[in-house]
Image 1 (cartoon, helix red, strand yellow):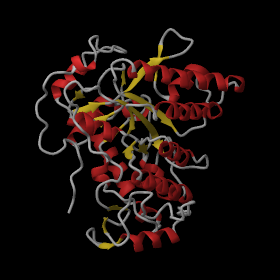
Image 2 (cartoon, rainbow, N blue to C red):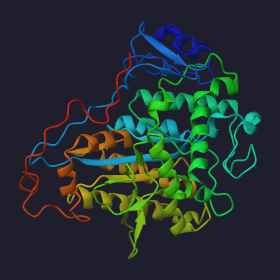
Image 3 (cartoon, rainbow, N blue to C red):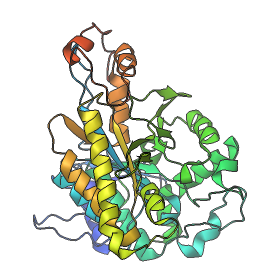
Image 4 (cartoon, rainbow, N blue to C red):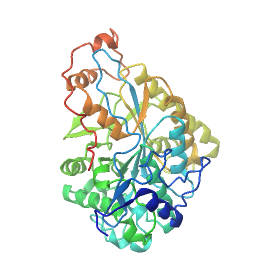
Length: 421
């Protein structure tokens, strides 16, 4: 199928939904979830899309619900950004991807979903994956079946149409010294990234699901950032990502301060926040809370589930208020679609979304939206914001602190996606 073939959006997607394992269930509004319509912000029926490659992905125009960033005015208090992100995003029997899509919509939030490429590769085609330093077909997180792929495709499609970002968590999730990502070279990272892209761009060929609706974006342009497995291998990954045109990385550990660019990429690392009941701070990720509570047991003492979830919830909320009432540094939170310790961390994250995302001057956004906003700001303003320490509000107030006269904004909006013909 030619990459430039054009077909009507309404007819093609409706037909695909009818035949798709994704189901495209009809919602209460009467519109089909997998089909374009006002609720999803997709192109109106009768407009055109351009299929890419084998039709696994397609160009459908600018992403819906993606606000254009605005430069702060002199003396203007910055908004409080909060990023909720998900490592290895996929839909399985727990239905956590679809659940948190709804949680986000109900609380005026968008999120970043770091999709694992092998979640779109069927088990019987596993040898198509050639991981660095491992034999073909090896993966520490397995592969997927047809139903799992169909369910994941549906959620990825709807998530993007709702304004969320689709990043990558790469493929095999190898950690540790024996061929783990921390030992990979720049060239090996480039191979892993290329394969992660390819599995998203060729799921139709690899699965034989010829009539399932395409993903409504060009993944070569959509993919601008990632988080490495186990936060390992960052140095060589960042160099590979810089060469490939990525715009940010979220694979590090940082304090709650304003981000800056490192090696040409925005360093949007997760951060340390208070850990209730302890003298030390904790990384803003469900896995790290779990390890510091139940060790390597993913299902520890059930009598402690509620307590452990409350620790995570309260720690994240305390970190939020430390920034909200202080330096307004973006709060970066990482999670997995897992039911560790009885699902207590999922409940904690949901509570945090509901607590913070509807507050005044708070923007719960994706990494793409945060990077767009940072790129749109005056460099001098960002440099001044970076002088504020953790939890430190300007002594003379925001109007005085940011009362300088920044350089005029450049023509256009830095970082905004270019409109294609």
